[in-house]
Image (cartoon, rainbow, N blue to C red; front, side, top):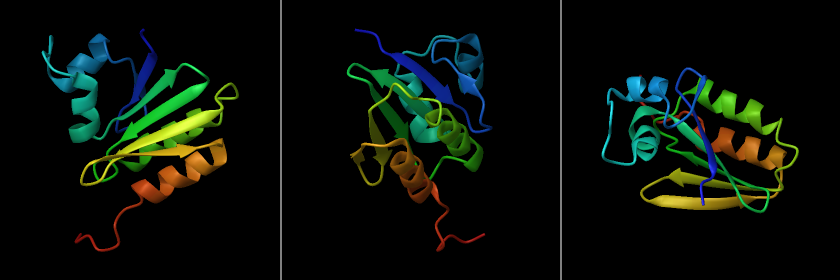
Length: 122
């Protein structure tokens, strides 16, 4: 079964994972790997996927994502009246999943996860 998937790119715009625009951003014309997963882990993209049962999965690597991508996802979440359950998959030392029952909680949790570390050197 194919799910609807869209990617927020670092500047906050949206692309489809099989689009020419996405492949150009990736720098590949025919990747032989999971390009969307690579973009999330390494390039600061956020993946949104609509799953059966009114569920949305959000996949993010908090240390690599920028503010504009997070903001784009949060704005999109405000438009998801049909979604009843949110799953946030985020990379820490390993992939972790959290379930959130509300848009408000999901928006707040994404902000927490993706906030810049106060211990970073500038």
